Length: 179
Image (cartoon, rainbow, N blue to C red):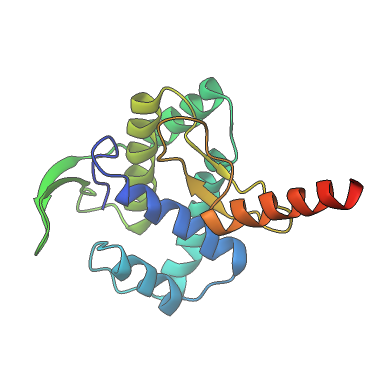
């Protein structure tokens, strides 16, 4: 699930997809969350309603980190999760994919431990690789979706090129209307 973000931020996109899914539907049901896990190649959990509730609660910790812009605050929040939910990293090869780093929950740990340890490890690796909180919320008016900043030059401000274009076109039209 948590590919090494320095090589491929695919695992990080699961984190933002989870945060965006729960932002759009705070009461997402087990089937919705199961589909999200399967889409991202997550472990073969069969989610119950109780699991879905626990996953929604755990995701709040991750979403809070995604709202942070200060590296020190983000590192402290990530370290807290790593202390509470230590990851047990393993190299895993999923069918049709290269080797990747995943976390494995201890046999007595459940979905919440897996989610929080996986996400904390992925965000911690990304923060250490980038040296900054390379994530955020879209700056486009009316859109507050989370994104992972995978660019190398200027910091990303929008979740998609569509939102960036929409803002640029609106600014261009506003300038033309003034002139």
